[in-house]
Amino acid sequence: MCLAVPALITKIDGVMADAELAGNQTSVNILFTPEVRVGDYVIMHAGYAISVMNSAEAEETFQLLEEMAGLDAEE
Amino acid sequence: MQRSEAFRDPSIVEKLRARIWAVSRKPVRIMEFCGTHTHAIHRFGIRQLLPPTIEMFSGPGCPVCVTDNTDIDYAIALSKRPDIIVATFGDLLKVPGTRESLLTSKAEGARVTMVYSPLDALNLAADNPASLVVFLGIGFETTAPAVGASVAEAESRGLDNYAVLSMHKLTPPAMRAILDSREIGLDGILCPGHVSTVTGWKAWQFLTDSYHIPAAVAGFEPVDILWAILEIVRQCEEGKPRVANAYPRSVRPEGTRPAREMMERVFEKGPACWRGLGAIPGSGLSIRDEYGRHDARRLFDVEVPESSVPDGCHCGEVIRGIRKPDKCPLFKTICTPLHPVGPCMVSSEGSCAAYYLYG
Picture 1 (cartoon, rainbow over the protein chains, first blue to last red):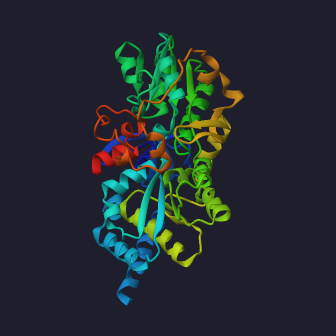
Picture 2 (cartoon, rainbow over the protein chains, first blue to last red):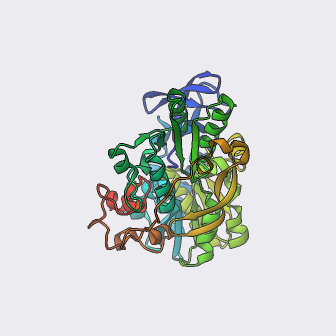
Picture 3 (cartoon, rainbow over the protein chains, first blue to last red):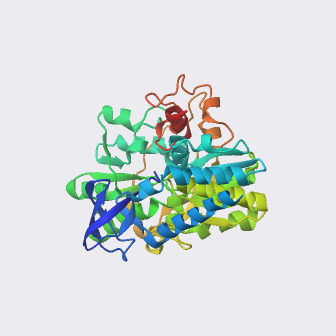
């Protein structure tokens, strides 16, 4: 039920948007994420985008994890 | 590279695994609240990566599983009315009520339709003006905003033949109920990623403030889950509980405000009865008076036979985390995904289904 998937926004038309979801085209309601732009990834659940994925945070996550994992080498 | 693939990178998984083994000293019991986490943990073999000091417990985070049989029976009774079309997420179709399921009711002629989104149910109402479409609103904070939005849209479009049977539930009160019961001594909570996407991670602050228990919000890829487990283990070792956000690409401190506002606009908090946990005050969402003409509970006075739980079904204990699915005598003998006795075997998020599929 809480399954939600990342979808790439390809076109926006009012509160509805076209999105690419694992290679398929779908439509998604973006009422809850008015800030979304074409090219963003959203987290999609039950036909609605519930958040816009923050790509900067995703990059930072990888840096953080690399640093965290790097500690092992020093131990 | 696809995003989800990056968060499945075996080299990062291995580094996180090694880090958890290096940090973990004390035995810790961690509950993953969310059923989607339960399935991801089984599917990716996360338990097999963890040191023997860490034991995972599945929590009540499967909306289908925690829906009380009284509600299931009510939905089935609605489906018997010839003027009603019941629209539902697929998960609910096979859940056994006291006497039958929605699927068997459909086989007997009831109009029951599976939808992926409440928007589909709304369109069904627009296309069938002579019928009443009742959408079965189940789900936590992740789902309630979408269902709320469909009610608000029905109101603004004047679609009086669209109603919702709200069985929505809120997750923090259930988490409190589990902790207050003290049936399991939990040392850490893996908080649900998509509930927290809507509510914000601050919704879990009470875990550290009131219960002094380490917590981390996790996404659903192996890297996300292992990162959150590492955060919890580290907090346990250091004795400094806090709510860590290990899913920052989707979860913000305050969540997704327009979604939260939609939920608050259409619904108000009320009592709810949870399978396994019983009545929990303030844990349910009822449709507000302003939207009363889209509230199936107010519109239809159907007679529901007295509800009961199937003999020998231990879903209640599985939901509370005090019984592992393979310790239920019905598991894999009488109760299978093809012939489920209880909802935990039906739902794609149920613990029993996860144990059945992945062992």
